[in-house]
Image (tube, rainbow, N blue to C red; front, side):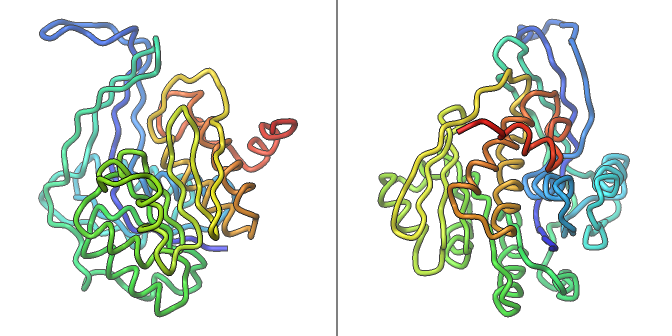
Length: 296
């Protein structure tokens, strides 16, 4: 099995503190970690830990953050031949403060200062042998082009729809699986039922809306079901949605039924939240199966 993804790459500086500091004050932190981030990037890391061969198409600059992003992905076994390095700028970085009292977060981030990937920079050869394509839509033109390549090669497409942005609804219309946030549904300015109807369209096999602590809501082949979030002692929810997408893609690749897919995705996302950082708590397949044993 091989999954390829095109999307945002970031270097995350994450701190854990006993509450947020007041403006213009200092506060000692309880813990600190630097890790790679980004929706598709972290989903691919999840798939890699679960035993799937993965490859990323993304963008960094030739700065220290870009070096760390590449190093982190390679260390997780993600093929970075499609990771384009554009010189003379800054890679994307995020500064995340996590409140140890309730695991809430405050995020400050900077976009990459180098130009976005263009369709002409995407090598179709990277898609050879791929069984699945993950997109986050954060580089619309490149994402739409990647989707067109996948469609020609009969590669199933999954869209991680975080917010309503230019090109997102077009990508949803060609995706086999759409996993979106509650914020995305709100941004569509219609009821949940109408939004699911629009997102399912003629192609989608399933649409899942993630609801944070409330779990998720899924439409699949004309019927719907809810799944509650697993209760864990949460430390940091950074990247939980990205890990959910990775677990979801794993279930699809395994050919599981939709309830099993959502159950597994919910489990790996919950386990991730037990450690600081978007990737620290991502489980192996064996760890995920042990977690699920005996749970409904």
